[in-house]
Amino acid sequence: METIHLKKTIEADLTFSQWFKNVYSAVKTTFIGLAITFKYVWGKDIVTIEYPEVREELPSNSRSRLFNDAENCISCLQCAVSCPVDCIYIAAVKRPTDAQKIKTKDGTPIRLDLKQYTIDTALCCYCGLCTTVCPTECLTHTTDYEYASYTLAAMKYDYLAPDIRAWRTRIVKS
Amino acid sequence: MSTHNEHNENEDKIILGDQEILKSDLLTLNMGPQHPATHGVLRVEIKTDSEIVVEAIPHLGYLHRCFEKHAENLDYRGVIPFVDRMDYLAAMSMEWGYALAVEKMLGTEVPKRAEYIRVIVAELQRIASHIVFFGTYAIDLGAFTPFLYVFQDREEILRLFEELSGARMLYNYIWIGGVWNDITDDQLKRIKSFIDRYEEDLKKYHSLVGENRIFSDRTANVGILSQEQAFDYGATGPVLRGSGVKWDLRKNRSYGLYDKLDFDVPVGEGLKGTVGDCWDRYHVRVREMFESIKIIRQCLDGIEEGPFIGKVPKIIKVPAGEIYLRTECPRGELGYHLISDGGKTPYRLKVKSSCFTHVSLLPILAPGQMVADLVATIGSIDIVLGEVDR
Image (cartoon, rainbow over all chains, first blue to last red; front, side, top):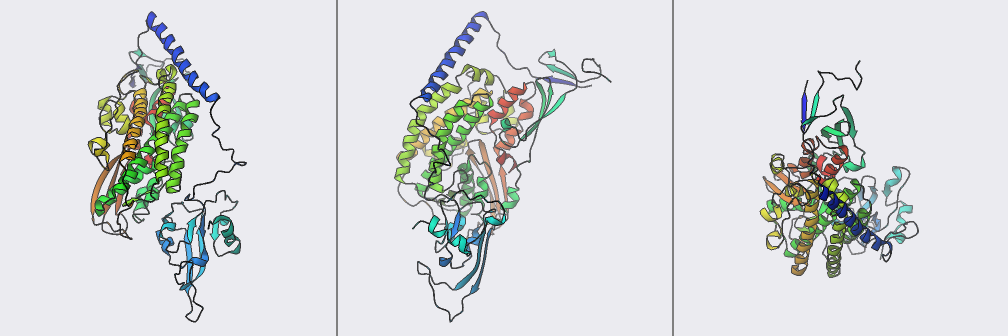
């Protein structure tokens, strides 16, 4: 047999005058609250964005869908190294010496041929560390959103595939 | 077989105050882990005798992500996105504590402008975090309207953070040595107009919720945490201050720019009931928002031009040694114990979270309460399960 002692919640003694005071304060504070809420009924702008019809434009440095402009990529692997969840897969081979010399947009010579550049966005945590280390600024976060897909495989973006390269005109600014 | 009505001499006795209450088989009830009032995935196993809670045992671990072990395999910059995910309602404050710990070991000088930006974003984050408390606590007690009002203001803060860092919740904004992006004059102006407006609105919201008779009756004299109990269980932050202890790390163990800024530390005074009840913890948080506004206003006046990130090596290698650094987060004291062996990754990163200690208060606060008061108590200690489980 065990006896459990519980603390009792403190309750003030209720006198006759206190009862009226309680009623008064309850009515008064309720009316103060109602006065505040009634101000919101009229004279306040609507703050809800009615989403499918009205689309919010994200700020320019919003960290949304990743896009790698493969033409400007020099396969330096810095993004893959800095990624805390290791979701960037890169394969590159050395460019033959007799091949035509090509450069990125900002003039960096490309010495490696990019064979694979895949980001598994299902793993990605959108921290933005890969975009900050990119020396040619080809890997960027875009402001594109809504990209749910039915399969996990569809979330692996192969940035050398023509359909994903076609995004460039749509989601990359300037 | 005995029925409920039969009195058995050998059964347990439950004494509430000085009277013996109905004794029968205690009903074991699981509150959570998918209960809206537990603010996340906390499971509280409660033993009740009719409406009265006899025992409450919190069960943790539903959100455990192995952060501390994982951090040992990440470079020092890569830890920051994971630090965000601990207390996801106050990610800026989490980042700041970690950045301070690494900077202190590296001996990095943080530029003055970065210090100001850090204080501004951390205090805005404190306001945003307390707004979530304010809104959800009102919902817990049956008032839905204040939630919608205050979240409009939170939206404004989050929009600003999104423009600064690019994300709405998990910012990765405060970096080792400074901050990621600079703040523009336009954004500073917007912060100014926001805090001016919000200061007036907050007074209105407080008279709508805190002064309301129903709210104060539900929270006053409920879940009283005495000063001794708060010390015994290691409570920090608004929970400790609600019990009437004037202790704030920003004031007492100053870091950042806080020693140059003028602000008060609000403590619970027992205006509606006893010192240390749920209403006091609520009131401390509301007054902390006013203090945060005061701090931001001083920072907006004092902010200097200059670089926003200091000189940090490309590959951070922290010299061997260890540090324990604690900061004042919206929910209480956050401590990082960082041990380094001189490599690229931390050797050990232990996090002392305030929410974890506050969850352990439940077994002493709950017995003797009604089930509905337990909801009020859980709401008033304001836990985030991401930080409890890590």
